[in-house]
Length: 381
Image (cartoon, rainbow, N blue to C red):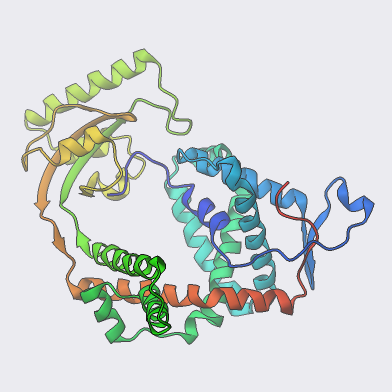
């Protein structure tokens, strides 16, 4: 279930800065004394130049983005995170030079749709800017990065993805047995170890890993218990900062929620009440209707009500971390395995993405060689 309480402005940022590239820094080249001060060039290549400040800005944005999601980067992991950011910047620079006019046009359309969707989830242009500022991004930087990411994807789609296929047999093997690109590679390694007479503990560990991957893959096809419900939300926190609203304002929200519940139990149309009063930023799109899975991330108080409330009954006012809810469950759907026909295209895309990822390390290695990429300073500071 998409949480009606949370703005959707941070997902792309984490994807942009954390997307694995398979690149690794070469040995540092000889530096001049002047390079060690101000804003030195840390990467250079044919048509490529990356300076320290750009990496530092990206790292700050990453930490701010993760903070909004309640996550942090432990100090021992910071050098690795900075290295991945540097790799991401190198990737973007090299693929920008490989992009065709068609790549750029498609990327522009894709990024435009993403940006428009992101804006539509904010209350206003000012709110859009404030929420980006909260994760350390300006509107200009965010939209530039969205376009950069879209262009990276377009070039990879053209140069790698378009050359790969997934057979019906591969899809069926995943659906029946949980087999994918990773399990095929691991099974080959196990067979090679066994053929070489390896009887060490690592063979058994590999078998256990293989079984675990298959179980996890099959679990992807399990559709947990779900409910379709109508929700009304009144915030008790600031929608941007998540700071609690003043006590008197919270009391007013509670009183309003109780009054609205009385109106609905007295015969008022809950759908109309939702459209008029709900503070869910997506209410005009969703009309307050959501499908919630039992294992979806949501406030525990809300989860308990959704999966215990009788169908058709209006809940009492539900108090959760972000606000007050009124809930009405309209339908319950039992846990089940997704039908093959419903899963087929998603599995095709999943397996195709795995095959792309399998090609990425060699592809990026060749890119760095083609553009004479040199790492002049290590990513960590």
